[in-house]
Image (cartoon, rainbow, N blue to C red; front, side):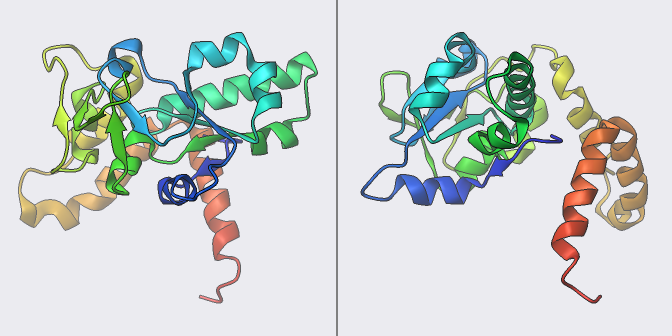
Length: 213
């Protein structure tokens, strides 16, 4: 999301593996139904989005970095942006400082699992069970090592309809995959918010500025 800095899952995992744990606070932005099944096993302090919002000043003063996350990073990215905007408006701190203090886990739980990160129950026990929130995210999760726990009959939440629309646009026949790529990109462009596309392209251009080609 525009204005939201991200932390890579493999970087977080490396930090958690050090002898001296970083002063990070993990903020789980998923629903209580999802959190009751499992959450990230990082060894770091962990709270919900509501708990953070209720006492944001104290948490910001007590930790070096606030790391928000959800299933794939969308809901937590929105939460991070809203919190930063609210804190700036309240006069707590400048936006530039807060954007470096509150970051989003890029790819969320899915990226954590692909980085061989583990899950735990609310009681702290290691588990392979995960509530994926909705069926739109199933293709983004690892095929092995995860047991999905959710009601497939529930409708896809409004926030996930964009992703589902892109997935449904994929061709059924493998031989049509290459020909369908431009159409798929166009459909994605028409469903993703313009500010998100602008921000992504701007960052890509900055990263490619050192290349002559």
